[in-house]
Length: 205
Ligand SMILES: [Ca+2]
Image (cartoon, rainbow, N blue to C red):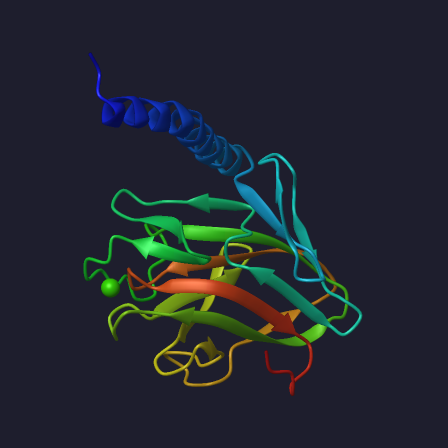
């Protein structure tokens, strides 16, 4: 004969099983969605929507001369034999953080590509939001249409426009038109979250 305690335990299990099942199913479904819609689009309002991988995303310069996008909203990415970009809590991170620094070499290093459309030609000012766990993981190479143009470092700067080698502001000379903006891993472990390209010299994120 089963005890009252055993019956209570069984009733509790019958009550909890569907809840646990539904919770696990929801988590699995959400994960599947993220895998399926593995590209994001940042609207001018700042809202983020998931889009199909085949949807081409172009970040257009707005009326104020600004092109703004999240690092996670890449058009395409390429990993290397040893390192890859991973999305971690809103940051794109070059993993693993094993001490690799490719300096100015962009031939065998992970990259993130973004389509941008420039409307107002001239000198543009680049800002990147990034950080790293230490001084060996806090820099990134950037460029246009496959050509590396410079390195930005984030030491003591969350939003940085400081270039590593030239020690000047990061600028891009762009005529009106479509370009591919690329970020290449320089030091592994570096975290990148946002990019701003402005034609205003006094703009700050
Ligand atoms: Ca590192």
